[in-house]
Image 1 (cartoon, one colour):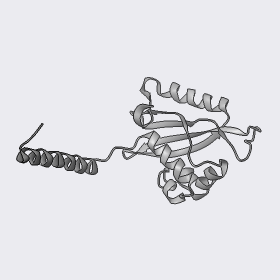
Image 2 (cartoon, rainbow, N blue to C red):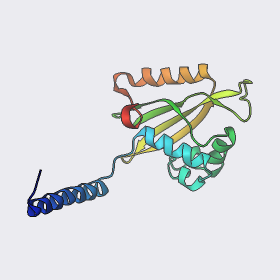
Image 3 (cartoon, rainbow, N blue to C red):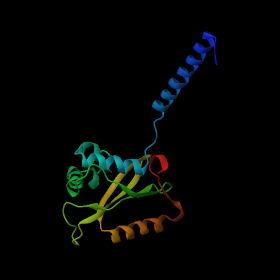
Image 4 (cartoon, one colour):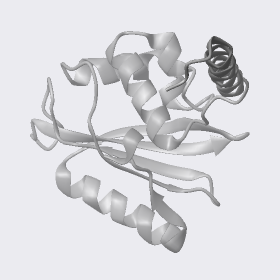
Length: 166
């Protein structure tokens, strides 16, 4: 137990200075985006009707950066968020794929399926991950697309875990 008030003050001041230094450090060097965080932010923005926010996360000139495409994502499901089955990336090649867990669709797919999976294809543009393409596929076609991605990039492919590694 510390009984000298001067020592308590010195310790309290040191703790406060340490906390402020860490806060300034985090503000100056925010965590970097990764494909999972970009897919999450795009989906949340689109599903919340925040069209401009979602469009900003799309590759310029590609469909995810267009108002109609963002509105289409919102119209496909009645949800506030999309849960991801997994997100995989090839950092050296700057390409990634995010696959959602199956979702109940508001309208059937052309093959008649009423459940589908979102597949976000992402690319790294100037050190920033952006959504290049969005598909909604049945489970079989999603698995085939994921397998092609993994085969194309081989050992470069790493799964991006969710925050906290869960």
